[in-house]
Length: 119
Image 1: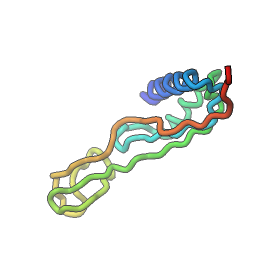
Image 2: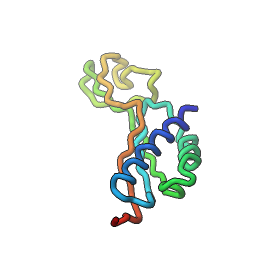
Image 3: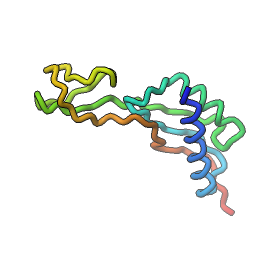
Image 4: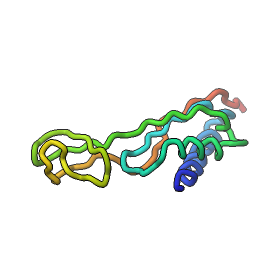
């Protein structure tokens, strides 16, 4: 399960940003999950809650946006969406000459904070 590692790395980045900006509590985290990341959303949610215990992000709301596998088919000159990374053929013309725009990672897109220390 690589979701735990992804969550641990995300928390490291969140804590670094919180410390840099004097934030004492993170209340919301927006993640974008790449279409080809092989991340299971329910596992990601479980692991995120687990790694956030006793941190500035404990109890925060997690918002996950699942990216679609957007592509350009050079054969039929159409924008398409792939349903899986295993089938890399255009659903319109069956061509395989595709420019895939989808990502395979997880990105933190936004943080919401409650309090800022003014020291």
